[in-house]
Length: 160
Image (cartoon, rainbow, N blue to C red; front, top):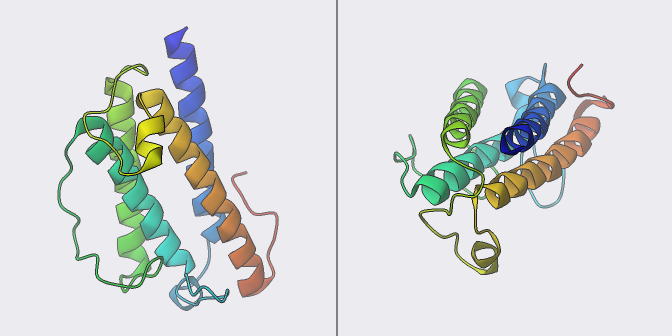
């Protein structure tokens, strides 16, 4: 039964990740780095944020360790000075690493580290981590969907 649950959770997580990538497919760097909402975030900054979230939850929290980020985290939130190639490669690499941690860890395993704040008290096992990452990825995929429509009018984008 646990294998069925793990397979289902992984399928939902991968579908949300694919949505993020599909929504942004075909956008040039200028569009990916143009803020379209008053808060100033950019689509590329959001992808970098999602890569950091994957790294944080699966590496820092589940395993208790993570390699240092490949760059300083010294820019306004949800923006990035990095190229689209670097950010998309980072995101894909963090997703791959998350999948490795997920495959090697039982759903009932307690995290080795604790996320700060109340959310850290609520998430007590790998199951809670993956559900949170699915929720966060889906939420931000929705943000990206709106940003894409504002950037070039395209809607209904997602994995085919």
